[in-house]
Length: 399
Image 1 (cartoon, rainbow, N blue to C red):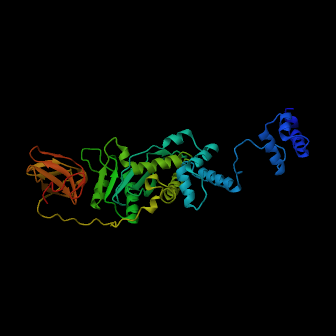
Image 2 (tube, rainbow, N blue to C red; image 1 turned 90 degrees about the vertical axis):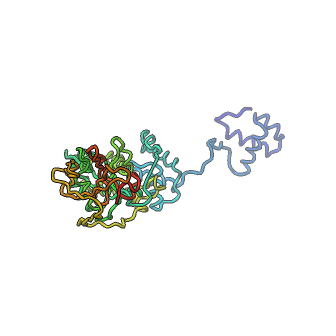
């Protein structure tokens, strides 16, 4: 007699009772009830173990989700809601740094975020492998840039200024400005230099206030940095990735903060940037640092900043000329336009070791131009270190 679903438990009980009564053999009973011998043995065993006659679930056996697992998922979801711009890898490291234990894998966290509608398809496609280069030690190079302006809630424009250490990714400055003029930028730099000391090199783009767009090639701000012994290097036009560290900070601020909330006024913008700078330096993990935070890799510069510009004396072995207010210098009875930024400053002319008609224009410890007396022209208006600049060979000019 085949078993019917509506009487299955009663039929199984009846089968077991007849087996126990020994009126018929187990094999014969199995044939009468339309079941196999192994099935009959299975139900007899379950009866003896006190399991009853109901079917077991056919779902794969898993430990029921316990309270800890539920709490863990809730912790992950809440942290993601606090930092909606971060993915599974960074979220896990932040939670580990906060002392959370028993966290699932990155893929499981990613699935939790998807299940709770906290991750978008474009977020999964955003991360792409990049080739990274950085200096070996902190303060060898800083990168500075404006993020580009955005409109505040009250209609004003905000221009966030960022300065990031190339080696450690430590953000030294995140300062909202009303504009990108030199005066405000220099005030921010003075504050940063007093707090952290000086870098050897500052990497920036070619526009004001970093560099001059006119033929002189120099800005007053660049000259001020050289007066303090800081070499200014400009990225090649059309190559913003050269400033990858500061671009990363700016992009992360946009993706992790501005995407979700635009400050109403400059005061709120300043507060938001200050809080994000603290988060970026001390809490947010960085893939390039092995998921460490920048603060773990940064240290203050050994070169202190001095408000007063130190007097510079040339060796006396070479010709020295003062730049006129018009930006011209005179050499060999010929006038040459150089740069108005250097007006009133003394320039040393060092003769090339390989070409007697070529003189290098030097200001303090920097090579800033090249004078070709044969063709009566000044070229290469760009700052280099006279000694130790990796972009040029040593001993190209006489000391």
